[in-house]
Amino acid sequence: MSDTDREIQELLADYAEALRDGSIPVFLKSLTRSEGRKISSAPEFWDAAEIVRYLNSAGFADKAVTPGVDLFISRVDAKIASRMKKARGSAKTARGTPRPAARAKRTEKTT
Amino acid sequence: MLPNRCLRAIISLTYQQFGAFFRWDGTLVERLLWHNKGHSASSIGRTMRLAMDKRLRKALEGLSDPDMERRRRAMEPFVRATFETFIRYLYRYLGNEVECEDVLEDVYADIWENPERLNNITSERLLLKTVYLYYMRNRLRDVYRRLNRNLSLSQNDLMNLTAPDLGILEMMSQQELKNALARTLGRLKARERRAIQLWMDGMSSRAIANDLKTTVGAVKMLKFRTLLKLRKMLRDYCHQQ
Image (cartoon, rainbow over all chains, first blue to last red):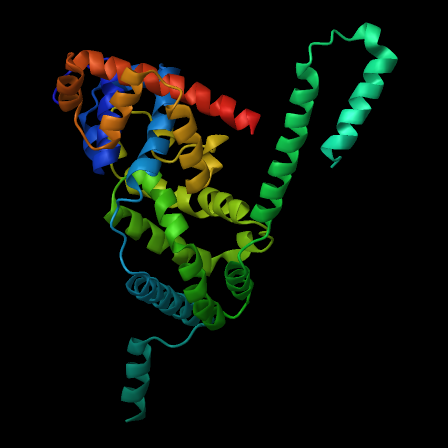
């Protein structure tokens, strides 16, 4: 990906390799302004990129090492728990529950 | 669906009646019978696809519960039933296991938070389409949005490259896609097929050029042309199906 002004077929080959190797951000960063314009104005690039995605899916998705689903479920559960906590927190503040600082002031007064 | 015997009888009767208007070449019957057979096969396939996995159906029912805690418990069977399909689908766009997991984690949390879109799902294909359009796509965009300030691509092009609209081929299941690819790859020229196969084996353009005894530039051009050819063949295959 070191060439400065790549042709459309070279850009496609680099995109395909980046997708295969999981390094799309590197490919995106490597694009120059003129290459970006070339991509925009080349419908063949988009057509071929579509097929590259299918080939990537058919050829490499099976080889990808996926984690145990149990471990993943616990990750999802933790994420949901944190979102629940956030939702409850925002609901409480919306209802006007006294904040810790206000509560402290009240206890000072009573004493 | 008419049995083939009936169809054959109808065709021959029609031919006797309107024989003068038809140019009989003998292949008409076979072609129609073939179509009849094709239709019955596809309708069976459709029925099978529509019949959703019982486990998945139950999991989806749990997601429609208004209680957050119960919905949270319902997520486990849902994740179990869909994890493999979703992660392979995401792999199409990211090509990276770690990012796939991160995105999918957010996708499941989004589904838990707003499961309304999944209320009237009747088939696995519809589920995949809905999840892609309403949950995955937003997350895929988020992955690359932060990069966009330093890129030479327009926002639109970036979106099309990372989270494109759905085409006819996009909604194919993994198995359907493999079958279609196997069929179309078999119809390519030997050299074209070799280039694609080597690339799918993980070889670089230089290594493919060495194997094909040509230059790197020629390999890139060959791959580009072959991919366009493959696309056309795949589209034709889909329309036939």
